[in-house]
Image 1 (cartoon, rainbow, N blue to C red):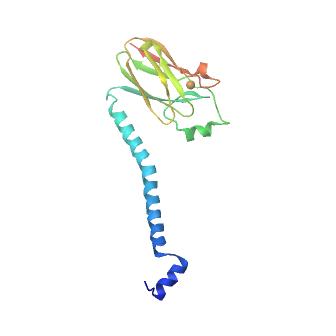
Image 2: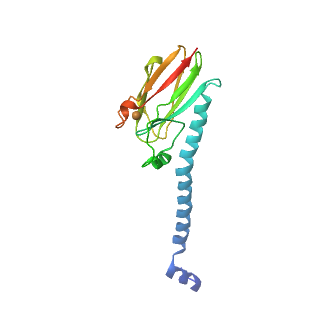
Image 3: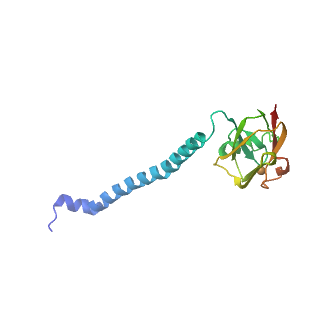
Amino acid sequence: MIEKPAQSRLMKTEHPLTVSYRRTDRLLFVLLLVIAIGVPLALQVYGRASLDNRIAIDAKVFTLTGHVDKGWIPGEVKAWQALTFHGKNLDLIQPVLRVTKGDRVVLKLTSSDVIHGFSLIDFGINITDGVLPGKIKLVSFIADKVGTFTFTCNAICGDKHQEMKGFIIVKA
Ligand SMILES: [Cu+2]
């Protein structure tokens, strides 16, 4: 094949095929990036939505986040948020959840650091496969008896493991 001068100049710097490969590579890279970020994000959004769909409308919902120093923090605390705790107030929190007899109680449990566990023996709850960072574990029960009940962490997680507990007060 006879080359035209313009083409041969191009070949000196970069073969036209290489140029188009580079462009394809870039597109592929962007596509992979979108998939790598988008799919887990979509799954998480979908997971949260389907999780919420499983919670009865009339349920009393509490969210608790396990933390090695602070215990059960009310609300959801992400790992990056928990990082800001270091060097600050690390007083242990022992939350008190108040419900009324007959309530359906739903606990959304997560962790901001290590694997925690959860047990609320009085209502037959004993999670054995862990409360994990980035995941929400749903616990549901009917508060069918009056009293003060203690829940604890059942996975040895740190120095304050023994004190990592909270209370559910069921009033009549
Ligand atoms: Cu724990």
